[in-house]
Structures are given as structure tokens and as C-alpha cells.
Amino acid sequence: MRTVHVEDGVAAPLEMLPILAPDRMAELLAGELTGLGFVRAGATCTRTEPDGIEVAIDLERAMVAVTLGAGAELAESVELSAQIAVEAVTSAEARLREDALRQLDDQVDARVVVLQREVTARLETKLAGLQRELDGAVGRATIAALTERAAQLGRIEASHLDEAGNLTIRVRL
Amino acid sequence: MAEPGLVSASERDLVLLARGLVSAQPAELRALLQRPRALPPVISSAAARLLGDALSHVWPALWRRGGTRRSAEIDATIDATIDRPADRAAQVAAPSPAEAMPLGHRAGRFWEHHAPVGLTFSLATLQLLRWLLATRLVAPAGSPLVLPAGAALTVGDQVMVYFALEAMDGTPAQAVLAAQPLVRAAALAWLGFADALGAHGAAVADPLASLCGGAGAIVVEALGDELARRWRAVELRKRAITAPEVLLALGAAQDATLGGFLAACDRHGRRDLAGFVIDAAAPLLRRGIAPMPDQLDPGATLGLRAAARLAAGALLRAVRVWAAWDQAHRGVRFIDDDYPVAQRLLARFEAIGGAGRARAEAWLTELAQLVPRPAPGPVLQ
Image 1: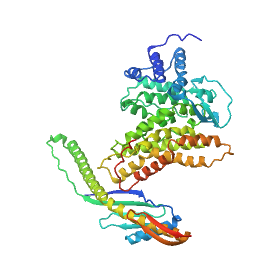
Image 2: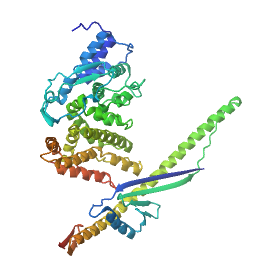
Image 3: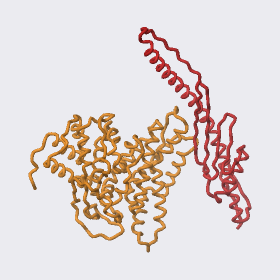
Image 4: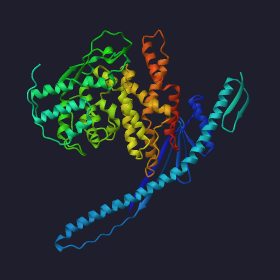
């Protein structure tokens, strides 16, 4: 029995515009992420998906890291036999043992590769949806930041968000 | 001048090899290198004279590669003692007239804006030539080509290494040569062949600064167009790479080379030497040819593929450094001492300009995305 663990992960920057001070931008993003089920611990927001995928967002660096790990206990066996002369039993047995170990290693390696590909495939499937979800959170945080910035400049008279995601804020100074 | 005297057959090959490398005749060189041969441990003084004569043509060879074009370069404010190796087998002065020139930037052909600078060759050049003749250039090579402990490559040695790598372009022999420790110790080899050397690790030769002053800087100036062509060709090849490990190794080598060289240029006040980055990237940015791989091996882990895509942006990161320099140059005022230089460099970056800079940033952002998108097609003009 051999226990193996495989992991895959990817990290990427979030496109946060520097509208307000970095710590305020981080606060706004954290607020949006909390609404999506993330748990905040200091400068990091994390969420573990039901399928085991972990999403961690570094608020200070505006980076997202997505990882998935999987473990398995592999029970592989190999049976080898050979017909040999009595006087060569010892050396032949040693050779067979070596061959068996090598074959076992190969079998385990092949299983690990399969497991690794499964993990990668699961992660890859998840990423597109996650990207959309995070883009939405970043977008809302950006709108909040723009509104806050506009309010600092004067009195907001009107704001309009069109279907393309363009925000117009009218401010009286 | 003394008569050259007789030389042995192996010495003749040694001299022919040196002449072939200097005059860039790859076909003849390959014929010469087809049959490895044993070489005596020493060469005669006649052969040494002939070898010195062959190496004396290195400057003209460099001029023929782009050194004759009219250009304006920043005045070298570098300490000329950067390239002063202890052991010199030959020293050849550039046959150009010395002129007293003002500080700032100088215009004209190389021999008009550079005082004569000696190009030195150490025993490493001889070692390289001997190894090339004695080795069967198939992977893996027999005895490695190693630089003796404590020895350093001169700029002349580096040029010969560059010529040798160039002569092997497109052949498996280039990979064998690129794996040799002596070759990997040549900063100029990294500047020209980071793709070939990077396949064996990204530990870039340390003395990149040796190319920012004295003879080294003139060599880089002369090879500027060629370097740009080489870097651009590698960028085009990136789109077809499918193995993430290959792209990762290539990107790491390019990042280390360009990062180190641009920092050295900056330290020595010779940002102009990094102009080949602009010449390499500008046409690609203009035509919308991003260095994004079309399809990385789907069997590789996501982490490896993401790292490989990120690595593919090495040249774009160098453009980003240039863009930061460009911003700084815009802040130099007319009354400042370095105003002419800043203006010159501003004009240099115009080939990329604001649009190119924005496109480079967009591509870098794209390369770092969580979910890779298909590479954009070229822009038709």
C-alpha cells in the first residue's frame, strides 16, 4: 500500500484599479468577497469549495490562488515467475525482486499521472466560473470605489451603469 | 612583417576555423568540423601569428554586421578598465581614428564616434577553437569545454563564442556547444542565444556589465540589429511551443538575460545599448503578434502551464522597463545636463510609443490570466 498526494494550482492577479488607497480598495474587495462566501483572515480571503478546491485571495497583492489536492492509497501488486536452475536461485530471486519493484514503481507512477490529470481537469473546469465570479466582485468593488471617490470630490447628483458595464457618475463640485 | 612559416595540418585547420568563424561561412565551417581530429598540446609560433592575423579581422567583421550604419549613441561614461583581462593572447586595436568628442551623444559611424579600443583574446579563444576541432559535436559531447579556474573571458573571446554559436545555427551542434561551461560564461552568448543556452538552465553569465563599456559596448552596438532579429525570431517561435517546460526554461533564460543586461545598462548610463529590445518588440507590437502559445500540452499541470505562459512575456517585461525609462526621460528638462541623451532615448522609444506600451501591458495581463484565452491573431495593416 502506498499513499500518494497530488496537487495542482494556479495564481493570477486581479485587475484592481488604483482608485482609492490600496488598503481601502482591499476593504471594498473583501466586502464583496465576504458576500460570496469567502472567509476573511487578515489580508487573506479564503473559500473552500464543496469539491475541495481552495480559493485564496491576497487582498494586499490583489492576487488569487486556486489549488486542488487529492490523495489516494494505491495497492498495486506484481507477480513474477521464472524457471531457474537450483544453483542460481539466490541471484535469480534477487533479480526478480528488483524487476518486481521496478514494475510496481512504474504502475504507481502511471496511477499518479492519472490522478494528477483528474485533479488538473477538475480544476480547469472550475476556473472559468470562478473567473466570472471574481470579475464580478472586482467590478462591484471598483464601482464602489468610484462612487466613494466621486463623493469625495463633490455631491453625487446621478449615477448610471449601462449594460456594457460603463459607469457614469455626475458630480456637483 | 616576419614570414608566417610552415604550419602543421591541424594548425592549418585551426587557422581556417578562426577565419571561417570571423568571416561567417557556416557551410565551410561545418565541413571543417565534420571530422574531429587530435591536436598537439601546443601550437607553433607561426600558427599563433596566423591565428592573431585571423582574429585581427574581428572588428571589420563586426562593422560589416551593422557597424557601418550611421547612428548616434550615448557617450560612454564607463571606466574603460572594465575589460582588462590579465592573460592576453592577442590584442588588436580597432583601426579607427581617435577623436576628442564632447559628452552627451555622438553621431556618425562607429569609427567616428568611438576612440580606438583594443579587442583582446585570451587563451580561451584558442581553447574554444581546439575544442571545436577535436570534438564530435553530437549530444552528449566528449570532454566538456571548461574555462580554467580563475580565468575570465575577454570581450574578444565572447565574440568568438558568439560567432561559433551563430555558425551552428539550426543544427543540433548548437545545443551541444550551448551546454559547454566556457560558452555559458560568455555574457554576449546569452545576449544573442538565450534560447539555446536557456535549455540548459538560466544561470546567466555574471559579467553582463562587461558589455556596457569599452570594447564590449561597441560590440553590442555593432550587433544591435542582429540581436533584435534574433530576439524577434524567438518571439515568433514561442507561439508554436507546446511543451510548458520548454517555454518555462526559455522565458527564465530571457528574463535573466534581459533583466541583468538592462540593469547593467542602467547602472552604466548606457540605456541605448538595450535598444535592440525596442527593435525586436516594435514590429510585433505593431502587427499584434503576441508571444502567447497557441496550445500548451493539456496533459501538463495547470500550474506548469500558467507559469509557462507567464514566462513567455520576457521581452514584454523588458519593454515595460523601457517604458519606465521613457517616463523618466520625459521628466528631463532642457536645462539638465543629460537633456540631449534623454531626447535621443525618447526618440528611440517612439518606435513603440504609447500604443505599443499599452499593448505590451495588455498582453502581459492576458498572459497572467486565470483562464487563458486564445492568442489574438495578427493585425492586418
